[in-house]
Image (cartoon, rainbow, N blue to C red):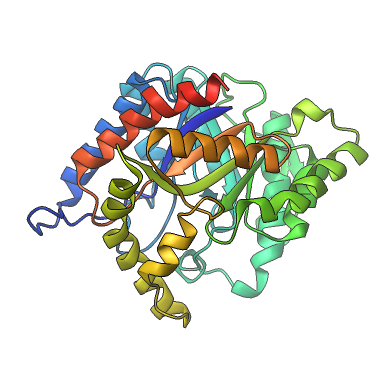
Length: 342
């Protein structure tokens, strides 16, 4: 199993002195984090996409280009690219260019996103939430598989034998489907034979087993070989010297993030009790000392019938840069070897 890190590039208030880190300094910190992930042997680093004031990742391909120029081995990708709100032609061109810059180290993970700000921002109708993604995914896959494309749909002008350039170094460019918890999304990924990246943000990971089974059965019925049906997990968590230290370091920022989201969406205010339960052995958060995190990764992989990749999302608005660097170091130097040696 391959391990990596995902980041939503949140704005950060330094917990030691209450100073808000300037955006340009935060970007510098992010590039240091990606470089360290490369140095300690982690497999991947992904950048999310949001169009909100508390995040700096609205243009992930630009961030990934900077990272590609500063790294040598680590795979880089989207986590996720909000395909519904973008033009598949431009998405392919940007990530094909990234693939050339990185010499073949790019993964394009596409999804619909868990926030809706991009819809009004780009003049899109939320009523088209499903049809936008389905149509744009179809076009993106046609572009990947054909240099010249003839295509027509509802949400974009037609293409008539038009060439899409540049072409990536990897052939084909790896395209993953990012999903939440809807059976239709799992079945669609399986029918298309595309690798699956599951965002687990609540509940218990083992509850996804029937959906993963649905994905694999749909893929098999469509004639795709088992090795093509890869499963990845995008999970929230943190690694520290002790499990108590991991939880205490992450909780203040988690509480800030989810208090804001709960207020926006009309949910109950989050609590420390809820956080501790979700960070427990069966919860969605992968939190703790290296052995605790490694054991949980292996246990969840077994529960889901085998996982090919896991990315730990450690974005936090009150996490010191030094603590995040240490978490990345522990993930690469201690958790990854434990997982690989199991």
